[in-house]
Length: 432
Image (cartoon, rainbow, N blue to C red):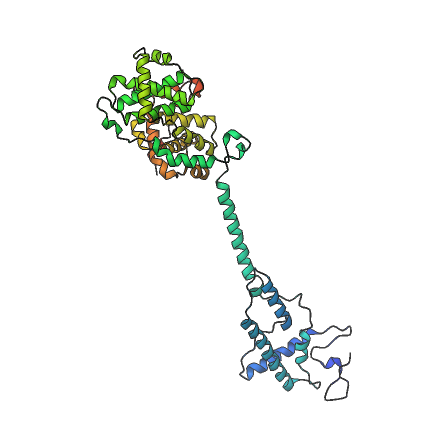
């Protein structure tokens, strides 16, 4: 390889270059680096500012990197002003290097300028890319995206779709189930009564109401009626007594007629009036039963379709993925609450949610209220604690006293001896 000089006609030996080329055409880099160190020392000795560190990536390739970063949405684009500063720095460095080489070059007169010019043509695949342009920001953005995706996955997994298994069941009305329970939640106030309505009664009190409900629970079990019938029966009694004054000797008749109306609304096979008279030990005649039935439906304006505790507890048990044992325990607790007049202060949905929560605590021995239960019930664990602690207290006293109809009912093999479960006393010790 022979290179001509502009100032002389003599051929220039390639070995005169500071970089040099070996016999197979490869450039020798060691001499160039020594020459560059000499140049840097001379610049420092003259008191001139030290130039930027030489980057072995060519200027044209730097612009290529910038264009690639701009095309990539993950990387932050380099501004024009910053690119201009890079170009200016490279130009100043080339001029300073050329001036320095003019004073310290060999007889060929090219000096370090050949190094800089040839540097543009060298491959840069093995050269490191500045971290500020290559890795810093993508690493942060990717990690942030991964964290966001992981958090979304966790939140989605906590709330389960409890209606998927019933998608092919037309009776489950999966397409309308959420709207139905939203309506129940909105209208449950129509089924509630004032927790102080008994003060308007002259001849009866809370104790008499408790005796009546406890007896009706046993009657309900003897007739083998559905759960819906029992809850609607108690609801009709409370709503009627809240509007109509009743003497003591007619209170049992009110209970019998309320059960008759509930059976007509819920049951397929309805007990006849004669059976109800026999249950009351013939305390009332057929005429009295029919007259009381007429009075009750008119007082309630024939409004029998109200959301009771039953409709809510079935939904919440499904959200809790309850088995048969947990279901029986929840019904046992909520039927104990039917007898208690003080529990009328809680709406049906809250009473049902608290029964499921208390049943879970009783069975598992720890507090348990999943996100799925909270989502479908619209009650947090803190909102349930007051009602739940009252349920535990009632559970502890269920087998004592005179009103033990619910306890005896759930002590039988028919209900898997559910009443023998130990109450969740730890809720009373540490309710919060």
